[in-house]
View 1: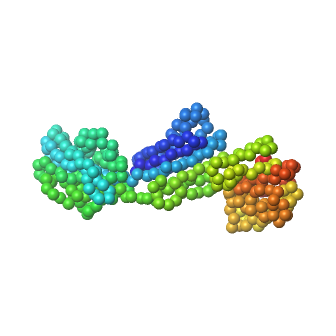
View 2: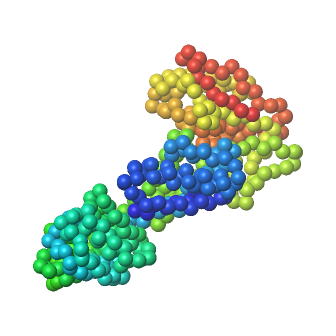
View 3: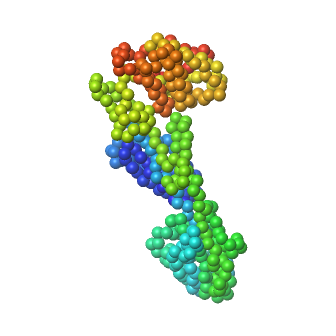
Length: 391
């Protein structure tokens, strides 16, 4: 299969593709190599070393927006020719290889292949594999719809399509005994029509059931990759899939200090967090809890009471064993509890609580000049819980 995607970094698009090949390692290893090449290309374009890769994790030191889009998998047919039997030295054989439509089975293109066995030891499987490889390469020439690879480990030839079409091989002739046969193995991800016993290329100079066998790719519309940040996992599906997310993005966070009367806005509403509306809310001060690795030491057993004061207003709540202690879940819990306790205190109009990923920001009304003050933070289970706070 041919896997393609686009890496997005702050408006820079780097398109990448690679052929899935188990001989080169796992799919993750191939994807990692491709991601590294994409990140390196963007660094070279920007003339910096901002992007770095560790395994399948890509990081921007400058906090740039990183995303993946246009994910696609081209499901291709693949077969291996091997086990060359009953051939005669000196024969000049011919057969056909066809590229077929995966829906109708009709031939899209047909090539005649000539195999010259003059001076060839037909009992030498390694030599026969190389001879058939040379013949196929010569016949297909620069046809980009086929990939032909010599496979010395199996004394054979691997043939794949590169555009999603199928493969049909047949019409073998000019063998002295009309009994020469090449075995055809169907590669993983492909299927062959007809009986498995007919998965052969037969040089019998007559119409044969093996002549109409078509090897097609297993069409899979559910190919996907997992995209995550801070523990949030979701699937990015192929661009042509009927359902599911087609792209994913991780954004940085920013706090802007502006002069009175200045407003920050977006020309597209509903983009989340501060930009749910056209203009971002303005306040006199802001304080942010959490972030990546911003919640530590919380008990996974639950029944832990967390309390502190926010501008003198009591914030207190108890964790549960059913809840996760991940940054994301604790941020969501903090946001809910802070909002509820400020509402209970009757001061909800003076603050806006903003949840953005694993960060919780509290924005104080622009009409209140004194800065936000957090005091008396405690937890009921040994005082191990810690929360990062930024202003």
